Image 1 (tube, rainbow, N blue to C red):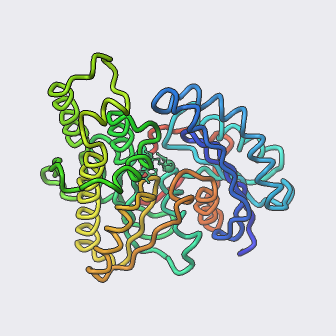
Image 2: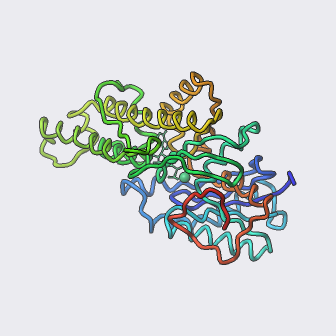
Image 3: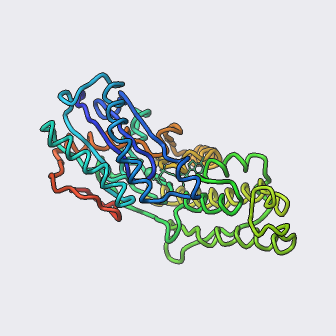
Length: 356
Ligand code: KG4
Ligand code: ZN
């Protein structure tokens, strides 16, 4: 069973990814074609462009993934693909391609939930990690606290009511003229800033102590910049460029203070959920889990609370296909396969126990 070979695809957003995973934890290849520079011109992901890039690149990343792993289609035990949540057109490219390959090579098809993939990224480098544990999944599209009861069995304990954490990073970075994607830019800019300089709100959701809300925080940053603009003017350009923003506000202080507000609520709610539900193990997942301040804070808080913390290395936090192959291994073992009627499901929910 440990030699099961899975070719996996991930095309839910703006990365075209293919990977070969052996035995559920060993990554033989992990190819990522990032479209970031294309979308950066527009300040965010343009769905139609993402789909077109996926269809251009998917054969190339697949050939590379197979060659680097030293395997052929005939060696595969299954083909896995993210079928949701994500951008409809982007998902359809991966799902169609995976179906065609599975059909042509007479190999089982496994549809994988994108968030489950992010959670499973933790298994790649941490052989000791096994359910049950709680996982904070924070990405461009999601902010969830998930109880991982078993492989393939999940319960969402908390979620964002509006923007995802990564979305807030991206929007605030745009306001500050730091470009797209905003997360890494704010992370870097915040390093020289004073996180106590501005007190931005930490929202609580009435009656749902583990839920998040980031839209008020985003508006508070926007108001802060707009007030500075009214005080200082925009030097007549009418356009916020990095240069005139830097004339109006201390960009690194704003970035650090915003980041502090995000990290405070993510860490507090996650530790509260873990404590209340009796978890002694926590994991981080998703693009925002690459954030240096969040990792440092979770490290410190978990150490103080006697909780063991697992984090994927940075390249397994952001989107990749290796995590999809790892998640698919558990479906393979459980005999959960998808039919050739598998469709993209842009709003796919993470349930208590998953079937297709
Ligand atoms: O998981 P991911 O690659 O894609 C989605 O499933 O959404 O996450 C992308 C998100 C983006 O919003 C990006 O700005 C954010 O993760 N991100 C970060 C960092 N690196 C990526 N946010 C904060 N700090 C980072 N270092
Ligand atoms: Zn993702």
